[in-house]
Image (cartoon, rainbow, N blue to C red; front, side, top):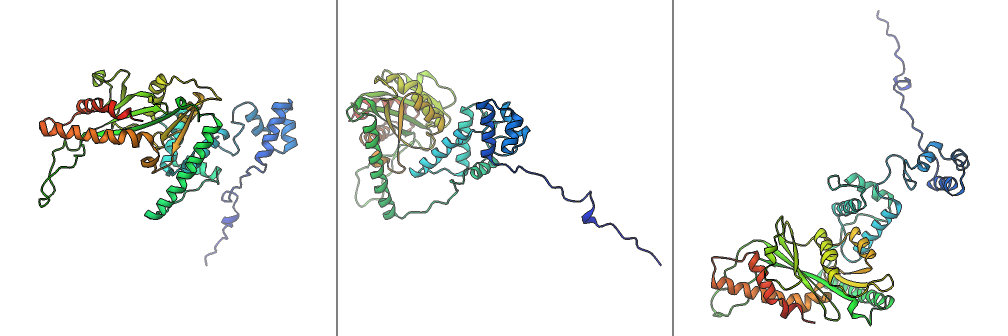
Length: 384
């Protein structure tokens, strides 16, 4: 008869017992007080650690600068300091209130751009979804929500509320910085994408016939023109964004004095283009003095591709107040869109239509776009 030898209890085997890890049992406040005791009152690391009940090695790493003093969790320190993350949180909340809410991917992109500007990341190593999850855990006041769809009438009512709030805030800014009697310090900037495939004007024809046809260049490139001016009527020379990899100065031949430009892959403006425009072109023609107490006010459309924290920090250093228009209100709140670029686009489409009727084989290229824009710039962009 076989005898079965009892096996040891596998659950109580010392090799298989689950290991217990002792995590911290101190508060971030205690660690902060211990750090201040050492730094501000020249206390010893050991004494401060015992007084506030924190690990001596943890405190010593912060005193020696090995770990960010503001790091409040175990493991690698956050990319941003507490103040920097607070700036990012404020930015996200303000943009959401204006109707420019960010998706997860857009938050990561915005934070990466911010980290690059602070030399805490390079462009080849963007932040990850894991960073986003940790970021949201650190800031429970933020949450991911699915936007509600608004029907037409509710959207109109909401827009009215947004517009009233916008003007109330604008009036507050004008009063605070004494801008109501300083039109030379109030600027507006806008842009218009001029498409190779223009929109033909209305054509007169027989009422009984079908819709007439008009020849266009087909789908193609876009050239963007950026314009700006102040409430006194002074105009900043135009700035072009051409599609391509390298800017060629011959693209600006025949332009008005002061006209400049750059290139982007698509021909549309983006964060880098807008920053370059403001720093190298716009400021060149702003003659009004700028101080901390008397800054200039810049009204502009809050397209998310133009807004980021490095731009906001740069504008603050330059004494420029960036005042963003609420989403979906450019057609009623954007002065340049209503008085300048609206007529500009109609004339541009008419000139392209004439060119295609005169010679439909050549089409509209980037040089034609630039020439038409220059031809109509004075009568349209100088309107007040």
